[in-house]
Image 1 (cartoon, rainbow, N blue to C red):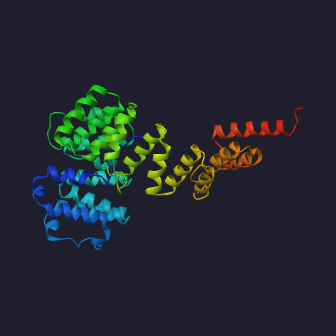
Image 2 (image 1 turned 45 degrees about the vertical axis):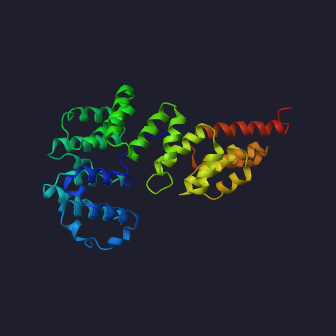
Image 3 (image 1 turned 60 degrees about the vertical axis):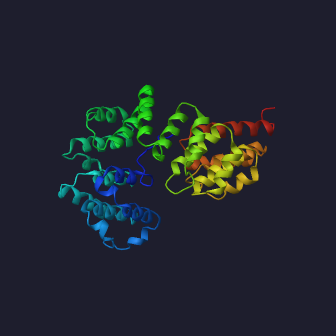
Length: 337
């Protein structure tokens, strides 16, 4: 199972920053503007077409402009807004947000983690280390800022993430208990708890948590993927199929749906799904080969496996299957008699 990176631009990080920044917490207009911006990114078709309550806060407006640039794929311009924060000595909560969103957009931001504010710098370097799966280094950095309360909630989320990956289970339980006392309704935290329960094979608890999350909503792709993983692991194929059918997002979902149909024996439905996706992006011919092998059509199965081997020639399992089917074909034709 792939790591769950908690720093996802479409989740609740903005509201987290909003709730710990006193100057913003008392202004509900900002939260409403952000919600509209996420749902309708074209409401700011011009970068400077923002209401006064946004532009009055230089750091916030800088962040909004950064976010819009990311949505418009203007990555170089987005970097300029980040650098503008540095030049104006605005190493604050919004700098943290810009960094996190930049990481989510796969911008090369490692150099921007090295800022004068030691606490924020340690947090940002931890984010980079999590992205590189270097959890020991991230844990070490967080330990050095343990007594500072600024951005405390975010620091504890990072602590939690690294502790899960390092399998420090007692530490994990303690941090979960503390964080849920601070914010029992935080969906990022619930997703991370579900991930932790899944890692420990407590699929029943993980499923209950995931089904309580808005997994069909935009921005909760990880919750959806994790729920599907749990359902497949517990062989609840019918339920997984129903969820996928109701919320197909991309070709990956169609291919997964095909494999689920395949698993419960709906071979025609499986083949329809396999025929709907790009064979270069997914192991379509491998799945077709398995399907035809189940039907006893050895020659057709062998043809698909050979086609798959041309695309993914380093896949040892495909090569083994080709050898097996060639031997089976020779026995069937009586060559060895």
